[in-house]
Amino acid sequence: MNNMPWPPAVGKWYLRWDKGEIFQVTGYDETSRKAVIQTYDGAVDAMDEATWKGLSLGWADPPEDWTGPVEAVDVVHFGAAPGGPVSEEVGQPPEEPV
Image 1 (cartoon, rainbow, N blue to C red):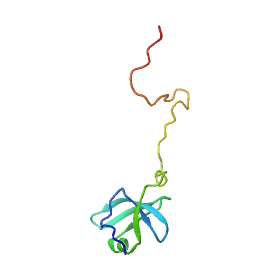
Image 2: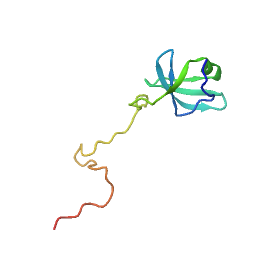
Image 3: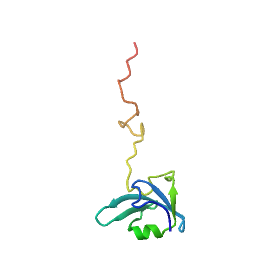
Image 4: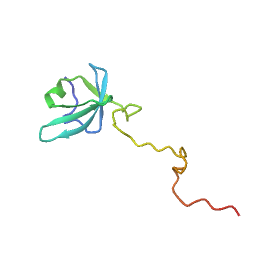
């Protein structure tokens, strides 16, 4: 049994003590009254209140690389390719030297 509130907070990370596994609550369906969770390795599952209350849970910090369970993330490498972005700065172009 745990004292974690139901329904769980969407976007929060939890530690499942019995498995030593962290997961994020990614949604809550009001109709079915089930929480949708995603483990760090990408597995998606749903659980009801009885299952939630029966688990040994604690709060967890997001993992250092929180993109682990995310399928695809666009990463821009500035200056890595000819004609590609060269700076993160947005503003006026540099002035020509006199």
